[in-house]
Image (tube, rainbow, N blue to C red; front, side, top):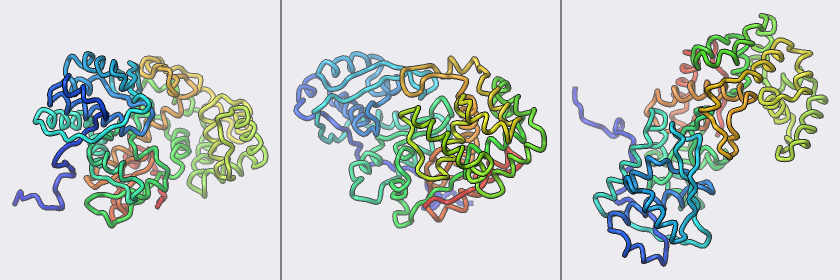
Length: 421
């Protein structure tokens, strides 16, 4: 059998002929302070900050050591003294050791392109790219970022940063979800994304329909599966669902599989009461937007039911599904002690581990386990969008078959899927 590599099975990798970086304009002093090799590494470091879609760029200490070596603090201290950026040492959900540094460029600093020409500079870039590939899903996500572009002139700078390898995917420590510059875009913007090797083929998303309601119905019907997959330390969160009688199990199952779950929830709880409670909740929490449609009203109600201790919502549900309501209440009170260390309060919107997040955490980790297993079953190009996978339309059937297969290996029945184009 021939081992010749064809265009079809060639590894998915985009390697620019010359790597690029960014250097601050009007700071020629850098050329007197550092060697060409060091300038190359510094330019790449700045490029990763400027290209970030967030106000602050989080960089793990291990990455800084690749850029600058063991004495990275000396380099950063010198650059900070030049008033180029603010540097804050912090903890983050990202990375196994929570050893991160936060950077933000000072106002009015402008940058120019810099070509990385030294062998050491090129090797540094390659080592940073390889360091991101800590597991199969992350490895694939980062390869796909290198071969992605937006089919719009409005994203010319973003496209340049993508193909230069500035952007990387990360996995959070809460729900084990993978995040990238792709995941935080609106669905319309994501629809403009293209694969560099199939530029004329449009993309779409294969989405788990009502992912967390699906997982709640599975929790009511087969709770032991969650313990088997996530570990016995979560048993205190899952155990209350073992008390749900078969009549209520079937009711929860049918709410998801017979029609639209959110419409069924409105019908079950009473539309007017549900709407009143959601609006009052959003008014009390000023940062919560009031839903604009009946279905979004129901989606918000579900989130409040399983992610808060709001007694009014629980009492509304208790009349219809008493055992399920009781299980939710008990699961949100149980303290999973190892999570206090695993998910600390670092002063960000993470806010640390609190028991009311139990179900959200269990659902996100289970969802990540299934969707990421599906994602890595195929070598085809695509991006993880939490509970969905974005890919070229010619690969949609394969992606959906893999999603059904991955969930079927975990649960007795798979979720419903929908297409987003």
